[in-house]
Image 1 (cartoon, rainbow, N blue to C red):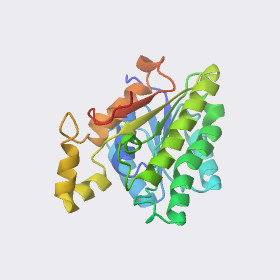
Image 2: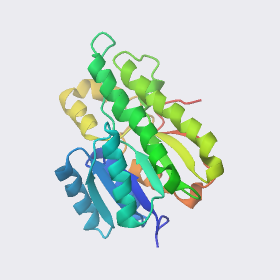
Image 3: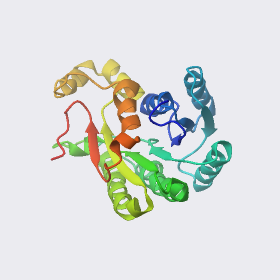
Image 4: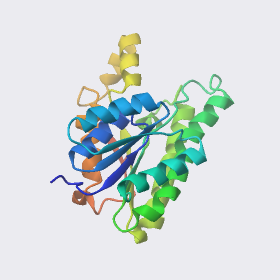
Amino acid sequence: MGKLSGRVALVTGAGQGVGKGIASALAQEGAAVVLTGRTLAKVQQAAAAIGAQGGRVLALECNVKEAVSLERCVAETVRQFGGLNILVNNAQEVPLGTLAEVTEHAFAAGWESGPLATFRLMKLCHPHLRNGGCIVNLASPAAMRWDASGYGVYAAVKEAIRSLTRAAACEWAKDGIRTNAILPLANSPGMEWWTRERPAEAAAFIATVPMQRVGDCEADIGRFVATLCSDDCRYVNGQSIAVDGGQAYLG
């Protein structure tokens, strides 16, 4: 019996990278996991891999920028598994570039896929999460950089998610719902691309990580999220936790 046996989790952006790693770790601890993403084939492939290890999984196509799509996703999750106990808001379009370079369209996409989608999903899931539910929102250590050049818009949408997290933690604790944010540094497809295409820049960044490595999507990030969602962390609420080998300083 895993720590999350009998619970149902919904993970957005779970077709690859951090989302897939989190979904896999939750399933290994016994949760039934709904994986969502814009590209159904990719989510189905991820779900099949997790299911082959014995996990109870469901793949759903979901565009987090569309309110109707989010509503359908939550309804189908509850219909298929009879409830919902864990929500992980991971999906995010990444608007990178200097303030002069980032377009309003990219900023809007980052806002709609990040804080607005997080806001909508938290409200949709709230009735189902009462009395023991858990929300984990993904923020970013990019917002902790002393030099935010090239990351200002991305950091802005991620900081908005942290604000929503804190508000939900304060307002919904009375309903038995815990809400926390993690700021991960993980070997996602984006990180792999950066390491491959800009090796010198990536190496210089990794050198600033005290543990001298980038986290594994499942073993480092996913396993931590699974623990955070378990009763082992039942008194942890409203926190922003950097899961990044010590690179960011949140003090």
